[in-house]
Amino acid sequence: MLMNEKLLRDAFGDFLAQNGDHYPELVVLDADLSSSTRTNRFAQRFPRKFFNFGIAEQNMMGAAIGFAISGKMPVVSGFSIFTTGRAWEFIRLICHDNLNVKIITTHGGLVGEDGSTHNALEDLSLMGTLPNISILIPSDIIELKEMLKCALNSNGPFYIRLPRGSFQTIHNPHFKLHMGSPEILKEGKDICLIGIGSGASLASTAAEIIERDRKISIKVINLSTIKPINVPTLISALKNVNKIIIIEEHNTYCGAGSILTRIISEHTPKLIKVLGIEDSFGESGSRVKLLEKYGFTLQNLLIQMNKILDR
Amino acid sequence: MVVLSASEEKELLIDILEIKKDILTMIYKAQSGHPGGSLSCANLIYLLYKKVMKIDSQNPAWKERDYFILSKGHAAPALYAVLSKIGFIDRSELFTLRQLGSTLQGHPIKNEQLGIEVSTGSLGMGLSIGVGCALAAKLDKNNRRIYVVLGDGELNEGSTWEAAMAASHYKLDNLTAIIDRNGIQIDGSTEEVMALEPLAEKWKAFGWNVIEVDGSNLGELFEGFNKSKNIIRKPTVLISYLIKGSDVSFMEHTKKYHGRPPSKQEYTSAISEIDQIIETISVK
Image (cartoon, rainbow over all chains, first blue to last red):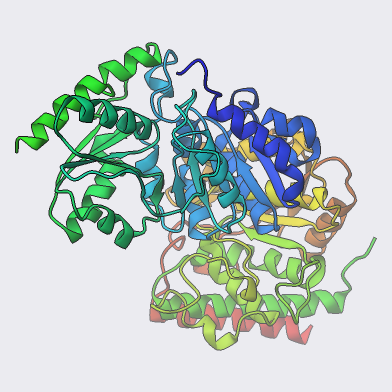
């Protein structure tokens, strides 16, 4: 966590509280975690439109279905793994009936001291397999706000995964989101780093430092829409590079990296490495130490780059 | 208190028996489906649509309608046959049940034009959905009522009890749950598989207004529904004692026809049994 950056969940709670009036059908649902997810800020301003379901994610998600078929737009919040995991079959029904439910969770990826039981390293595979859903992962607060506007102004189910902490800001305040399309943060030709969530700022920083020290030209992409992916723009963005590293805070066995690898390889042959959590639940520790242990560091990225560039 | 007149009851009974014949024909033609639990609850679903719920028979998607949720989605043939009887589904469509390309899948699929509010089939989800509908209606100050039909077997699902807790916490007096208490689930009697009793006490302890009715008695059911409309600050559950496979002697009180279609001989004999009941009622 970066001490000088605002937490993404703070920005989420503030957005709901500040924009509640713009969305007359908006209701917010939480499962006894509103002080952590910051939906309590909405609850304070709009008490009639906030519903606490207690520690009962299944019923909360089922109630969201009821709200949606009654013309409301529920935002359902909680911790990423409990919300997507415990209530998965209700989310499946939301997607099955293509209902206007926005699932916006916090504590995605490695959470830190709470440990492996609270990590969400499987949520993207749980959500990715569902038809109709849009899946967004912000790389910073500016992008998050764009995503929230986009989700609340669109019809249909959304999953937006926020971290517990903060991400370094990489966008300027005038940034506009193009949902589905990769965002090229930096051009380059020897290798492409695709960052997802926290991976985007890591890729940007790493590219800058590594290019300064070595004669490599690095392309950097922020990929914040996991689903639906605009395939032609993705393939076109990767046209001039043959080697790719995808960085995601998720189990690599079945995550965004796997999804992207399949899509890319169906169109063009590339050598791809997915840097993420390798089939593990993680563990307790400070976030900084966890990121170090699981390889989300400049040093490891350089090692991985050298490996792939040598092949 | 409004009660059903003898002639109204007679008319309803005949309609319900015709609905039961449609259920059997649909499942027989599909050679797949759930006759036992469709026959058990057909009467209460029809009574709801015909005499209890606020609906517009010309417009299934009427904004002011009451909501019906069939949590026990495997009773889809009963729902489809009722929706056909009231004019929301074309009768010829009924006999495409479970076929490729039919709008009538094995379990109900959300379809506003047919009057199906939400897809159901995976058990234990309907009451939570009803809770959301009831909260939304309260928020909008809409006097819509929400009716959720639950199988007794699906009360095994923990999510049902999460919803029961929430409905009473939020004092959802616009929500009525109806339990098809036929006592039988796939593997045997509910008490052998996963005991539910004392069921009424459980719902009372969760803060619900509990009404126990002989579900085969339309007058009693109707009275139960009317009573539930007048309860304030509490949701109501009608524990409706019904008979699995009701009105087909060899399908009654058995798990055998939970999810098994009748053979040709069984189908013929079932239809003739129901025809005989219709004849007896008609001459009364």
